[in-house]
Amino acid sequence: MNKGTICVQAGWEPKKGEPRVLPIYQSTTFKYETSEQMAKLFDLEEAGFFYSRLQNPTTEAVAKKITALEGGVATILTASGQSATFYAIFNLCSAGDHLVSTSAIYGGTYNLFAITLKKLGIEVSFINQDASEEEIVAAFRPNTKCLFGETISNPTLQVLDIAKMATIAHSQGVPLIVDNTFATPINCRPFELGADIVMHSTSKYMDGHATQVGGAVIDSGNFDWAAYPDKFPGLTQPDESYHGLVYTEAFGKGAYITKCTVQLMRDLGASPAPQNSFLLNLGLETLHLRVARHCENAQAVAEFLQGVSDIAWINYAGLPSNEYHELAKRQFDGGRSCGVICFGIKGGRERAIRFIDSLKMIAIVTHVADTRSCVLHPASHTHRQLSDEQLLEAGVKPDLIRLSVGIEDIADIIADIEQALSAIAE
Ligand code: PLP
Image 1 (cartoon, protein in one colour):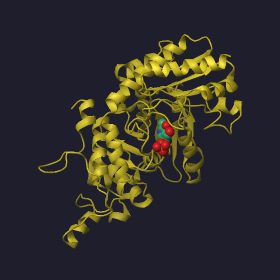
Image 2 (cartoon, protein in one colour; image 1 turned 30 degrees about the horizontal axis):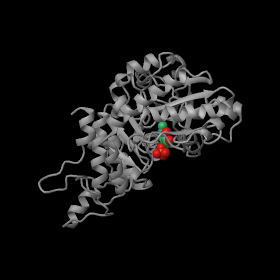
Image 3 (cartoon, helix red, strand yellow; image 1 turned 135 degrees about the horizontal axis):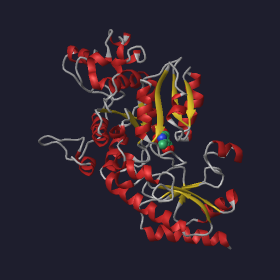
Image 4 (cartoon, protein in one colour; image 1 turned 45 degrees about the vertical axis):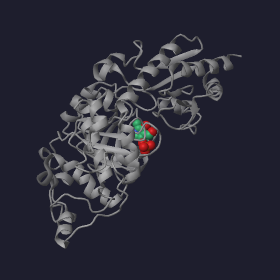
């Protein structure tokens, strides 16, 4: 099936007399007829639902749809994008390990890596994703377990050269993990470019209506863990908590997601509510339509802003003048990146605040990627504790305005921006 059909049809396949629409299985637990049947589930000898912390039929159907969209072999859904990032990493790394990450990443991911993983004994080296292969390779150590980056970084909108990063990761015998939240599988399938694991904050475009917080980790099934048994003992050596089972031997290409489910979800429990999986599925049914419209509207806004003398700079890969334009054309379906654009208004921080306060329809919210256009000034909101110097170090200009362009009528979006620009010109 093509991506648009997968969005609508994949995942839930009702049989005779079953509901056409994916039901919400609002049940913690599932019934069995004999003690032996249940024992086999606990020994991972048979697959089946027994407790919704581990697996739930609503959640599983949505996971299947996301697997198909990304072109992977298996997916685990989590309670948030943050837990998805943590699981993706912690499934490979433990105390004493190291990973390499690009520095252009979501602020919450940066905190997780720089502060919380450090407390767990996992060290992270941050690299400039646009540096040469030699410079990036220099950050690797014998205990490095993965390379991490965002397809399109939030909020700086840098585009990751996934094929380059995959080549580097594989030359070092580790997988490339990509956060594909902003691009979505509609615009980019990182597995086709060599990535091994993909993760998402499904709270963004996948849901697309800002109704649930969720995450997903998807495995391509391509990384050969067994080729590096000393590097990935958690996958290639016996698990005491399952009578000495070896994930790569028992589950083959399903090893990574199975371990993530039966160890991390079992022990840490960041599972999504079935109701949230249902809402996510509704969002996914229109992902292909929404993403196309978000990108079309964002392109129109970026082109409009280009002609406004009060605009200091614009960052959107859809503009031919953008440094990532060629890479976006090569890597993204139809050259489309996402519906988020960043720009600065002449006059810096103070005029940026006046501009966003003057918007009428476009709302100030700490979110991106839902149907409604919204705006944020990171220097005043998400990054407000940082000085101008610290902001620049984090790659966030003090005047940066992040605009998530919605799917409203483009004329109304531009009219709102125009009236706010007029208001601050007075
Ligand atoms: N990754 C990216 C690129 C994000 O933008 C976010 C949230 O904004 C996250 C991960 C974290 O996701 P969540 O807010 O669902 O925990």
